[in-house]
Amino acid sequence: MKHFGDGRDWFFENRYGMFIHWGLYSIDGWHEQVQWRRRIPKAEYVKRVAKFNPVKYDPDEWMRLAKESGMDYVIFTTKHHDGFCMWDTKETDYNIMRTPYGKDVLAMLAKSCRKYGIKLCLYYSCPDWHHPNSINHGGDHELLKQNPGDEPDIRKYISFVKRQATELCSNYGKIYGFFWDIPPRVKDPSINRLLRKLQPGIMINDRGYDKGDYDTPERKVPAGGEFSRPTEACQSVGDQSWGYREGEDYYTRRFLMQSIAKIMSMGGNYVLNVGPKPDGTIPKEASAILKDIGKWYRRVKPAITAESSSKYLDHENFMLTRDGNKLYVVCHKDLPTSGIVLSPIGIMPKSAILLNNGKRLTVKLEVTPKHYRSRPFIHIQGIPVEKLIDEPLVIKLEFKALSDKMLSEMSARAKNKEYIF
Ligand code: GLC
Image 1 (spheres, rainbow, N blue to C red):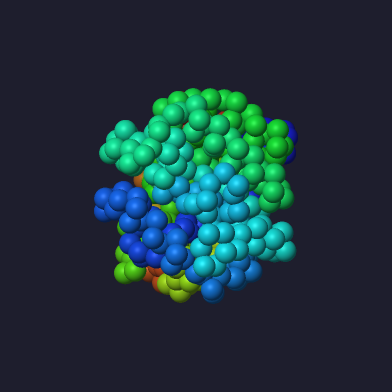
Image 2 (image 1 turned 135 degrees about the vertical axis):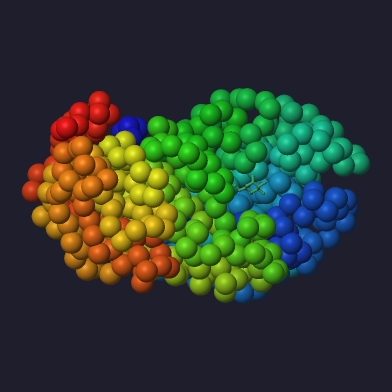
């Protein structure tokens, strides 16, 4: 994928992040949009401010979890749709300083990020169910009607957003990314220009006031082989909510790893979300999932974060990535067989290693009965598909020499159906 050639390129070197949804809604333990989805009146919802007291909040603990899980960056919900601000903002009283906790949790997180070398990115919701000037006309993620006493005014609201974004991009050190949520109907490129001026090198997503730098497929793996635009897929450890949820339906580790394998091999970044509890701790089920995935991720990282080369290979169960003379076969689905043919690639590798356990696999260049009219292709056998069933398999093939030209010639031959017979 074409890089920007400026400070934003950090994004291509740091592919795995932790998304954190934390706010007043964690008190309900239901869903981050509980105010809207359960039709709670604003006057009722705000009572949570007096109850928010995350005495066990320890951002160092969060960052150690991120590190241990192999993550490079974090995206933190500074303001979700409920409008509650998780930093010491001067623009509204509806913020963390007014809770019994009374400390700037974002400042604490930013400090911890620096300490652990984790890059900090900020999430900010365009809809706001609290601010009097925000628009709530029953549109996407808007309340059905304004709160009593509201004075909807898009110009005033945008200027409030700009002042808040200025605080966020001025007072917390280096901000690597900005994750707007719920694309607003009104477009205004001056907002992202402001962010870029305050934080050169900031990566901005596609859900804000213009199309930004990168796409954000959510909870799904898009069809296709390789992303054409910078991409960061987001997914949560649980199926029901992004914020803390009691009795969450957690995804299986295998399901999450398969989607990470696919997205990253397509050239995308991946952020996996956790929803801390009202006491500030990350639920132990969630941290166990992150740690377990991290163990697999560390073993296969060089492969799945290498450059996507899937355009040379079209196979439903695996994708290809390449790093110099190495090709990686990333099996993002369960393999139905213990042997695979890498049609149309016909160069004999020096070795084939299963990165999951470091063991060598049998590899030959041959014409198999299924490809009897073709040239010899790489055939890998003895893959322990019945034994290693808990995680996506990744195979490293090392060659004496390998180039894009060689790969594209082979794939062109296959596309033109140049058979030997
Ligand atoms: C969706 C949800 C929102 C969540 C976001 C994360 O837009 O509506 O609650 O914060 O996904 O990407």
